[in-house]
Image (cartoon, rainbow, N blue to C red; front, side, top):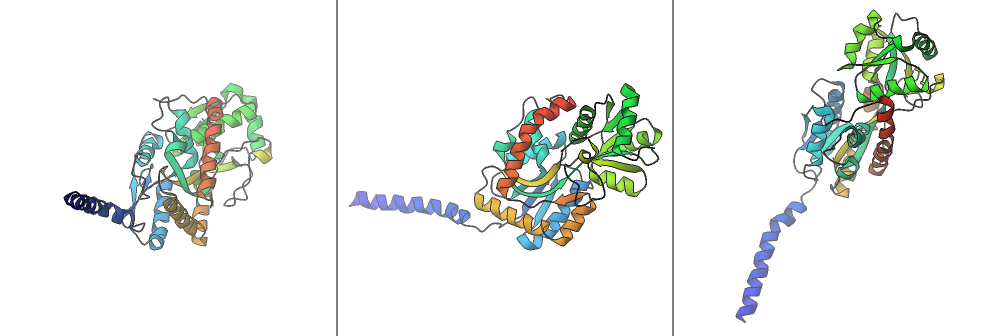
Length: 324
């Protein structure tokens, strides 16, 4: 009888210890602040976009959304921070999905395997980099620029900063049979004075910079790197339709640690999709030369896997040296 008594006491004690964990597991999501982690500094185009999304999502989520800027190491610091965070849906990395895919190939010792460590919860938009020349340049089309670059041979130069810009410039050079020399800059705006002086024949800019500078009369956009024309800028011809078959598009997504429960991933997907589907979001994103992209978590993850397969060729074409 005493043995059974102590067994019952032990069982009751074990259940008492489990009770807090069970209660915690049953808490509704979200029950506290959600953190959007951003790899870019405050005031950047990406920062503006993420803060817009956070503002529009707060009344839907009915929770506080905190945007944290963690710039450095080309986004790796922020990515690793999220990858190693608790997989509970409260830490979300809002970043370029194609850049996430690049981590495996751009580093000699990658801090983690992107497709294994991270799950795309939702996609946000697609964007394409653009070939630009100075507004006073005589080149009106990509064909005009290509002919001039061929005539100049190794004396031709172009500027780029981001890895995607470097890759797109190198793809143009390879596909068009050019010998132009690339000049790497810390940021896109630093190319503008050299374009104006004629030091550079062209540059590769992100759509936010390219469209803003064209509106101000400083540059002329000759071609877009996406396979099809952007919905946000349908007046701009693609490089492909001008005889240079480039198909290079970057995309933004919300990513979480891979072990995040499926129900939480689906909830995050629903929140982002609801915001991105609004006319207000479409107008906002189009203003920056990006097209809204709504998808399922599975479709987003599949896109990251496709990008992972492409990056070895990108690195070869652009002659990028692995870091670290």
